[in-house]
Every structure is written in structure tokens, then in C-alpha cells.
Amino acid sequence: MLASWLLTIAAAALAAAPVPGAGPSVEHDAVDCMVAEHYPLLPACFRPADQVARGRIYFQAEGMTAWYFVEMKSSMPCWNGVLPKPSRALIDRHVNYYIETITRSLGSARTPEYAALVVRSAEECKLPKIAAISGAGPAAVQPFLPSGFALGGIGGLAKPLIFAGAGAAVGGTVIVTHPKGPGPDPVGTPTPFPIPTPTPPTPTPTPVPTPGPNPTPTPTPDPNPTPTGPGALSATCTASPQSGVAPLAVQFTVAAQGGSGPYTYLWAFGDGGSSPAPNPSHGYGGAGDYVPTVQVRSGTEQVTCSKGVTVIPPSTPTFPLTVSRQGAGSGTVTSAPAGIDCGSTCTASFAQGTIVSLTPAPDASSLFAGWSGACSGPGACNVTMDAAKSVSARFDLRSFTLNVNKTPLTSILGSVTSTPAGINCGLLCSGASASFLSGTVVTLTAQSGLLASFQGWSGDCTGTGACVVTMTANRSVTANFGLFSVDPGDKGHGADVDIGLMRSVLRSPGAQGEVTLNGRTVLVTREGIGQVGVRAQPGDNLVEAWVREASGPGTWRFELDPAAIEPGSLRALAGEPLAVAPNSVTFRLKGRAGERVSFALRVRGAPAAASGR
Image (cartoon, rainbow, N blue to C red; front, side, top):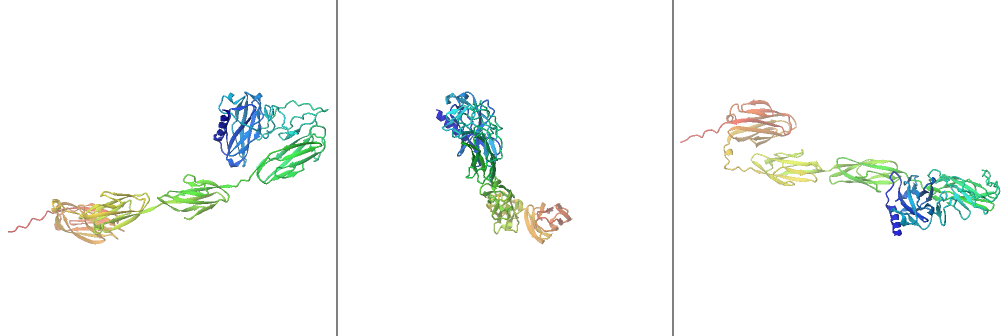
């Protein structure tokens, strides 16, 4: 059962939610318990994974004020850290901890502080999350192993760790165990990064069986000084700075005390370089984690001191590329390499020197009209990212053609017009066409002339009602007209009388007109004189006339046979009359297509039939 708990905890660390905040983040599923006398294994995932420089776990026993830390190791895709064993003395107390990461660009992130209860066994934990157990302990504990924890079979002592039986590192201070007895407590202040300076608990030192107190180290300019008095050899060392971007210049220092003879030094910088100087400087050209170490000798004694140096690779500058879309049309723009998908993502950053190719994709109703900004024209767009750049892509609505035809031979029997304007195929027109933007809804209206009837649409419209087409492609419509068939039993038409000639005088530049009598077209005329013989019903009649085409103002005069009109019955109804006579009327025209004039008149009754024998 314990094994399944541990597998669950290890998997949970990979699924934990990230700590909120900008920049890097740490994903870790906090544990509730740690088993005493076992190494707690704490996994975490850092984001972005390819920018991680290092990871650390900071910890302390409940009631302590100082923090200690262990370095984490990469275990792709995440990192693992191992704490020293909590001793049995910490059972029923808590171990406080948090996890921190540093990125190569010196950004940092950390988790909140967690408190894990130390228990005798996994079965004693009343909470669900128990720390996994590692078979090996951490490589090192900084600044030293605190009280209540153990490495290997030794623990619970607030003494420095022993290196090869010779000494221990305490925040940069190295202590050597004297053959005649234990050495002094650590010298110096532990400083786990970046937590404020901890003050480790100071155990009671074991007296050294030599007369007098240990001498205080005295700074000396001599690179090989002679110790001022007896005592265990110790040394402190520094590295400044301990992290930075390559190339990184680091200044090293070392201070020794105690020993039994002149001091000699040998620095090994961790990249193959070395120096016998006590306080050398060294430049790191490549990225990596280095452990520079100085070896100090005095008589028969020897001690080492190490510091960690992290060198981060120089970052390549990036620049933003912003794409915008213009025009009434629609479409998307994508990039190679990937990053722009506009649409949804219209800004992306690319490394300096990257050549970004942009590709437009207009929708079916649109067309790509060209680039502006960092690119121009309708061709390819390749942008070299040596600064922030912006590009605009213009998409226009596509235009489609509407063709309108009228049936041959009978085309003069009717007219077709459109809304919105564009098609205006009158009595003398056999066909017309116009372009409309994609998505435009066009309504066609057919009107029949004298002795004709509209018989219906064919093509992209059918039926006899209004023809409505949506311009998402080229369209073609035919209006079918036929001769009007008079019913022999229609007494109304049979009662019409011949009223002689109607004469039209149209004076307007480029004018074309249509004249109707009682709703039926009787004359289609152009600029000049036109006439037609007409029949009308006895009594009231209505004459209407429309200007179908015109390019300037003018006049329109109508004349009828005075013998057929009742005196005083002719009167103007619409338009701007200039003169009205018993058998004629003249209108002023503004010269606009669609202009209408009308007048009324009364026709005398049919003459009595001649009597004969």
C-alpha cells in the first residue's frame, strides 16, 4: 500500500497547478507527511522548462528561524530534490519547506511555504499526501546539516559535514578536524540564496587539549603567510558574482587560519582552468554550472573550499511582429515559422534575424488586395526581424456580375429594373448587366408594356413574382414577356373609341420616354417628335409619361385631336406644367431618369350610327 501511495505522489507532482504570477512558475503538489529516518523525495516541474538554470528546496525544522537548502537535479521533464532524513526527534513536529527556481534570464519563482508532519510510518499519516522516499540522500546540504536531520547513518548534530575525514564546508568556511580532537565551530554566517542570512544553532564546542584559545585569523598581504599560532587549519572563500550571463568574469578570494606552516593555494575553476594565486579572477566563456574549488595547504594539513557558479547563455533578442487586417472583406494571415494566425493571434515575437513569411487566405466572398507597412503590393511578404515590425493585409469584397436578358422578339414588350440600382433595361433594351459586391441582395422588377404581359422568370429566378438574388457568385436571369391576349367577351375594351393621333414632342438632351394611357404603354419615344393612333374609353382617361433616360433639362408637349376631347376637360395632374390648352399640355422637365408627368381628359361619346334605308 505504501508503494502505491508513493507512486501517486510522484505522479501528482507532474499534474500540479502552477503558482500564479508572471514569468517563470513552479508546479509542485505539496506533501502532508514525511516518514522519519527516510530521505523525502520532492519532485517539481518548472516552466518554461528550457530556461531553467537551477532549482532548490529550502527547509527548516519547526521552531527554527534559519533556512537550509539542497540543490535539485533535472529528471526530464521535471526536477527532483531529496532532503536529509528527519530524525526520530522530529516525530510529531513539522518540516517547513518551499521550492524555488532561477531561470537563465535571472527570473525567479517559488512556491508558498508548506508544513509536512514527521511521522513514524506512512500508516500514521492521517492526511492523503505522503512524501516519496529516496534510496539515496542529497549530495550536499547548505550551509550545513541542521540539527534534527541526518545523512547516511549520522544525524541530529548541528556540526559541519566532514569531507574525506578532513573538514566541512559551512557557508564558505572550511573546518578541519584536528588529530588531537574536534575543531572549532563554523566561522562565518550561512547565507542560503536568496533567503535572508540564517543564524545556525551553535553547539557547545569540545575543548581542544592545547593551551590557550585558538588564535584569531589575521589578514596578511603575503601570498604564503606563516600561521600566527597553533590550531586546526580552516579557510573561507568567496566568488563574486556567483551567477550571470556568459562571458562572466568572477573574482575569487580565500582567507586561511590555523595550520602549522606557510599557506599554499591551488584554485581549480571547474572548466579546466587553475591558478596558484589566493585571490585570482577568472572568466567563464561557456554556459554551465561550475564548482570552483581552492585547495589550501599548511604544513601537513590540507583543506578545500568550494563555491557554485552558474553561467547563463546569452539570450537572443526577440522582436514583435504585428499583423492587422483592413478592408470590407475578410480573411486570415498565417506565418512561417509559426506564431501568427490572424484570425485569432495577430502578434508574435521572433528571434533577431528570423525571416518571417506571411501568407494571406481570403474568404470565398473576398479577395486579397495587397500589403502595406513592412511589406507592400500584392506579392509575397517576407519580413526580416531586426526590429519591431507591423504589416497590414487588405481584403476587399469580391464583385459578381448579374446578367439580365429579355426573351427575343418580344423584348420590346416590357422592361426590367433593379434595386439597388444597376440594372435598367427599358423597352428598347434586349439585355443588361451590372456588378454587385459579394453578399448584395438584388431585387429585379419586371413591367410589361401595351398589349403585353409578363410571363415569368427563368435562370437564377423562377415564377412570376419579384426576383430576389443574393450575389455570392455570377448570376443570370431572363425575363419572359408575351403578347397580351384580349378576351372577346371583354366589353370594356370593346367599348373603346378611336380618338385619333396622340402627338409627343420631347425636347431634352439624350432623352427617352414612355407614355401610357390608362396604365397601358402606347408610345415609346426618344428626343424629338413621336405620334401614335390611340383608342380610349368614353369619359375620364389618364395619360402618364415617364422619363427613362435623360442628360439635361427640357420640355415635353402632348397634343390630341380636339374633336375627340370634351372642351375644358384636359387638366395637368403631376409634373410642372408650363401651358395647358384645350387639346394640349406642356411640362417642364428637370432631366432626371424616373421623372413622371401626367394629365387627365374626358373623351366624347361614340358618334351615333348613320341611319340608312
